[in-house]
View 1 (cartoon, rainbow, N blue to C red):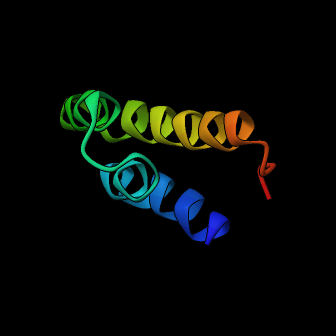
View 2 (view 1 turned 30 degrees about the vertical axis):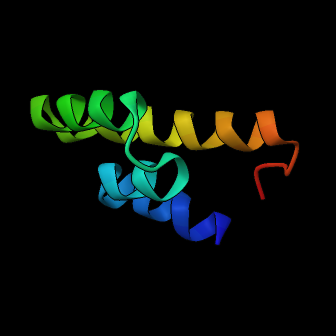
View 3 (view 1 turned 135 degrees about the vertical axis):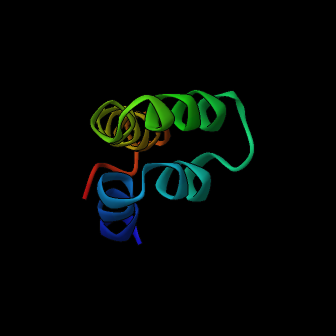
Length: 61
């Protein structure tokens, strides 16, 4: 499931963030960044997903 979230975070950034955080401010920030351009949204999604796994102690992979 972790790999799927990272792949979705790259291809469809808001979906990857939604699966990780649900409806939250992180999702809203990601939607705004994705609307500005796809690349900032993807970078933010990968960063946010990795940060989530770092905080929960599950590791990135």
